[in-house]
Length: 290
Ligand SMILES: [Ca+2]
Image (cartoon, rainbow, N blue to C red; front, top):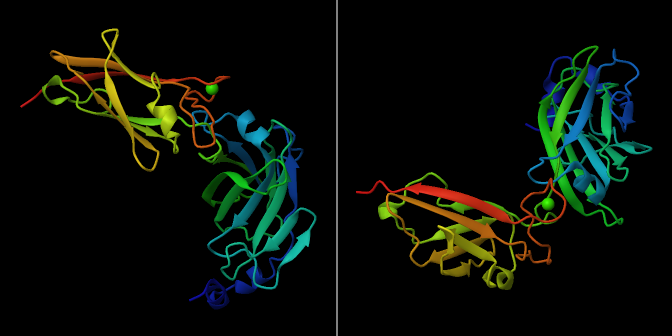
């Protein structure tokens, strides 16, 4: 049964059918500016993951936020489509229900706080909120995104809603996502045949194979290694010569900022710190064997 048919079959659907008022919507750039705490509203805060990108990095990369309010229960019946200023009711996800779509400008280096007043929205419809960030320069390329589901208004309250909102990996500097085997695991016989380095995105092969790009050091001495990059460009396999220990195996893996992605953007392991930082990981493997 389509969403429209479900709605038609539902008792009280006439109430929803009248829910055609536009949503009054305030955009508040700074926190603490909400004049009327008695409002029934959602206070959206876009929250970048500091391990991936800073607020400034996200805000300075995007020009406009496309905010979509949707609900599995349906927000607006067919025929409600309209445009008022930067707010539209349109059928974004091509079910037969209309969603609310708002274009929010992003001031340089700050992410807006967004207050949504309930207005004509159905009081108890669980909301899905999707945010997409469009790149600066007018290309309308989507480079950041985030979403939350199941959000409800509370009568007379302004409900805080944190929405994870991060740049896509294709526009962030590459970083090391994982190194295998993980720290504090077991190395059979205290010998390691292979170290696998997984990047957040495809990286340039020549930059990975270059001398000094990936270094493994044990007891202060670099280990001789043979590095390969898997076809996808995401996975470097490092075959060390004589990476072994007695009773315990300790070593450090370093991936230099000379490693670049396919656009030539250099690796940055610590996004929250200015400049580009290498990956440095210390490993200690136990050797309980057969
Ligand atoms: Ca950095």
